[in-house]
Image 1 (tube, helix red, strand yellow):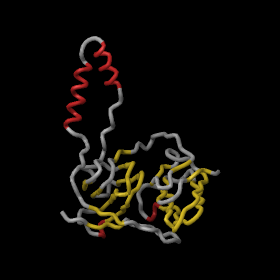
Image 2: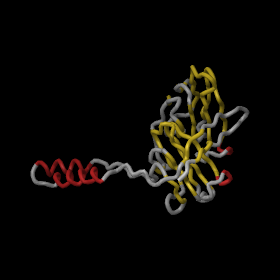
Image 3: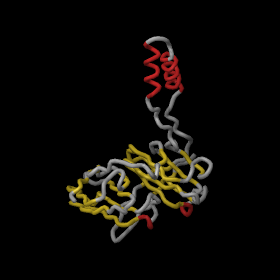
Image 4: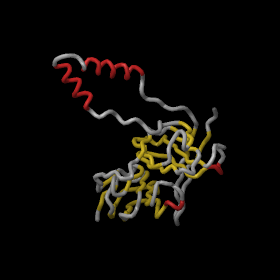
Length: 233
């Protein structure tokens, strides 16, 4: 299967938004679990069901919460409705090689693109029921986001951390990032995780200091290539 160069769709709102190029190649599921690990876990559980003290230890082990199964494995082409369900998904811990794409058909042509992005850190994507294909290449596993989930919003964030959910990951307010150079810092306020032009409330490429007020009504804040942000008000 050939490898295609994909350009993440940028957005321009009174400024030039820098796009990034990522290699996109379809592939099967990137299963990180091994049969060896499964066998080891089974052996441990069996040992825990022994008599005496071992039985008590086994009960304690089994009471630990199991690692959540990925809703979408990191790489592959997925049909919406059969392989993946519509909803908002999150992928965290990406190193810059993650590329995802929402498409209206499986033609692979540029006209089929609905939205796409190259990711460092965390990203959120809303897959709509009208989408046909979701592509993910080089990304960490995806998990469904509970729309009713509550968090402990932080008052600072990594400048290259990706996307943050407002009210869950970060608190609304005014944030400052200093020491940015060569217009390499890009920030974006978004009303949702659709990643269309209509999703963008405001954005900018920055050199030097950046100051932005994130509203409580914003859905997400995206930051790439910036110095760390701290809440100032």
